[in-house]
Image: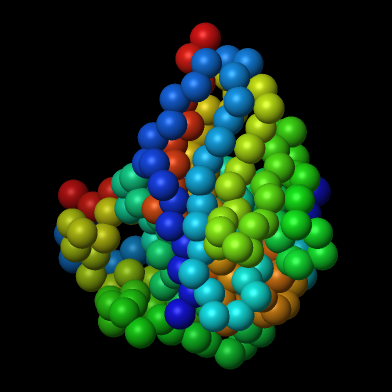
Length: 114
Length: 111
């Protein structure tokens, strides 16, 4: 089945130690998104790629970076994780950037910062 | 800017009872609206979406939602709750290439 895959599902890191979360998709969608979801809160968009065009949200901390080496893969890099970065990170894709395009979500990676 | 407001962070119903989850939107243009469901430690799954084709939208798992422009609402309903419906439900409005989510409503289903 075509899908959005996130690895790992659970990630533990230490305060200040860089960490990379991975997302891959078999849907061949043009757009890939990264959301941060803290406990009992709504997902918050960090950034997205439309093809290779990177779009950062204005309030996304500089600590968060992303790479999209090809259509299928997108990575979220957290350069120096703080305790406040502990959250569920959701990757999503959509076929195009149109308003009515459905977004398909991966299962998420739960990040713990010790 | 477009936004959605979900009234009630927690809703509890008995199995077999009507489910009503409320969502109101704010938009200067005709909105595209979505309902997503999230089970524990899972990603979000689309239940249904409104794209102006029809005001009553039917989704998966027996859910439906009605777009009411006069009330700026897009409430989610299901005639008869099942235990497996217990989850977090998010209303969302499409913006420029991204979704803006409401704060979510946790649905509990009592046996």
